[in-house]
Image (cartoon, rainbow, N blue to C red; front, side, top):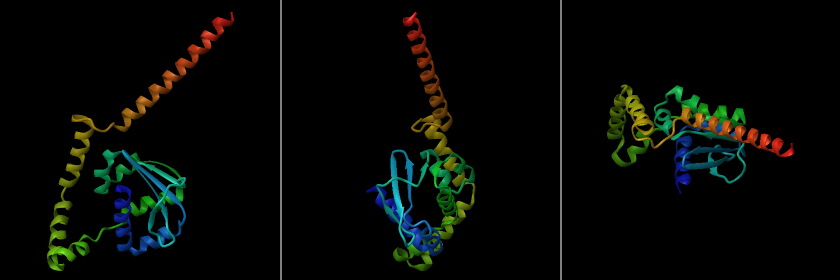
Length: 186
């Protein structure tokens, strides 16, 4: 259900940006998988450029640590470095381009509820708030809280260190097994 809601939202923004549909339609039939723990969403690019749910093998794969989401939402360019991506480089390049350049027309969606003038004023007020550094500070504070003060998320450096320690332990066990085998043979 969450995957369907996420794809519906993405498709809505894609349809507001017709140019994006044209760009994505060039990758029709390709599948991309996004892993944002605990969610995994696979989608296939449809001939019209929209996305549909998919179960197949992914042509491209992105692993996004949840702690990056607030930074990506505010378009922090440094956050893109921490996305682990594999597969079709042209498709990944297009996805990253779109993620940086797609714009949600919030005023259009709000106008159905409030009318055009009020919707524009709400979006302008939100934009002036967003223009300040408070959004960036809030995102950084949330990320720090979730990784430091109330560790709900593992930091990428900790995961890398853990993985290296597991590899080292595996190698040590293999060497020990080989040594025991040699001792038994003698």
